[in-house]
Amino acid sequence: MSLSSNSTQPCVSALQILKMGRVGIPPDAVKIDSGEKRLNELGYKQELKREMSLFKTLAITFSIVALFVGTPLYGQSLRYAGPATLIWGWVVVTFFTFFVGVALAEICSSFPTTGSLYFWAAHLAGPKWGPLASWCCAWLETVGSISGIGTQAYSGAQALQMIILLATGTHKNGGYFVPRGVFVAAYMSLAIIWAILNSFSLQVIAFLDIISFWWQVIGGGVVIVMLPLVARTTQPASYVFTHFETSPGSTGVSSIPYAVILSVLLSNFCLGGYDAAAHLTEETKGADRTGPVAILASIALISVFGWAYILSLTFSIQNFEYLYDENNETRGKLVPAQIFYDAFHGRFHNSAGAIVFLCIVWGSYFFCGLSVTAAAARVVYALSRDNGIPFSPIWRKLHPKYKVPRNAVWLCTAISMILGLPILKLDIIFTALISISAIGWIGAYAIPIYARLVMAEKNFKPGPFYLGKARRPICLIAFLWVLYTCSVFLLPTLYPITWNTFNYAPVALGLVFTLIMLWWYLDGRKWFKGPVRNIDTQNGIC
Image 1: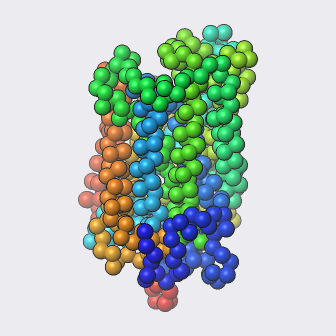
Image 2 (image 1 turned 30 degrees about the vertical axis):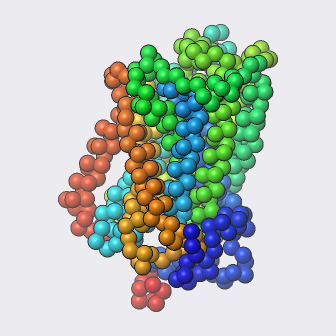
């Protein structure tokens, strides 16, 4: 990495940026907020309240890159290829994720705007390709973030289902297993609660996400440390770190490379969403510095805590095959829930501890969904501000008092609720939601990263976080990794393929993006020019 030589602001190294921590910009460094100054230079006036500190931004971002978000995927990922692939796969994915995070952090430092990814794509791709790049990136990000609300609502409803089952006596003892209709009602209720909370000042969300941060750090620490201590027996290190075993009889996957790829999907899904800090940059103090810090710090935190959580679960397994038995205490529906139950029931002969742990996990989903809703609404707001979606004047309207895009919040919520309706008939809908969310959200990273890779360096105005000559290899690795990640989420996850095992994500995404690109070709390219400046160039600011 090198320091910027042509930036109008004092430049520091990436290491210094990371060391700034909670302090952010020194109070005597600038008289006008540096993020707002850069926003004005880009042609945007400050509309949202700039009241977020680094810690609050990090709290929201870490809530999206949540510690327990991969809990529903753990069981299936473990079964594909055994514990060794799952454990070491996390390390490999973490390594490549940092390349993506560093590439995005540099761009975020230069373009601290709410539009983030699609705004970056427009400016980095240049006047010829900018509108198309911006269009594709915006819709990828919109689809990914809105389906992300559905993903967290499903996970929250499933955790609640397990809590109720264990609290009423377990499956073996006649406990109440929530049927599909009630499950969907819980899904819808969570989405609505998140929308209501996001209709108030962002400070409300920031406060709740500070609680979320400590909820996951403290609660996650309790789960990680206590689970193997409570379990009467633990798996040996040789099993956890070296045991490889496929299960073609239950997964239908006999190819070893294919099984390994599917086993790592948990890591691919969990290590995403860290760009959320960029969506909040117009509401964050010193965003050209705090944005990159929040992106990289959230990746670092989830890398460590997430790996520790997976290790804790795997060490605490009592009976591998019993975890998937449909006649066990949790009906084989959520493997971590059964691991919790086996550990506490084996030690204390009751399920109280397992219920407490599941409540901690459920809280993580609740806070994550709250933050994802906030991020999705900012994406829709930014796109509608640039007239990129139908009825844009409605969705870009800010609440006069709270200065939040309330209409955009409810639009995202309504769509996510519609996405949940197929749960009434299909078990595989969660796989589709995860795939759509991952492909849309992570896939959107590829466009600005590729544009940064191929653009002339003289056309890039760096912010305080600048990669210098290192940007080409970093961006190349990041771009290729994003393409790989998106491609694996299109794969079938169970065989033989039936209506109830088919991965509907390719069909859904293919249909949606065919319509979006057809709209672009027939109409959008005639009027959509990318981000629209809202500061008059005649006033001398731009």
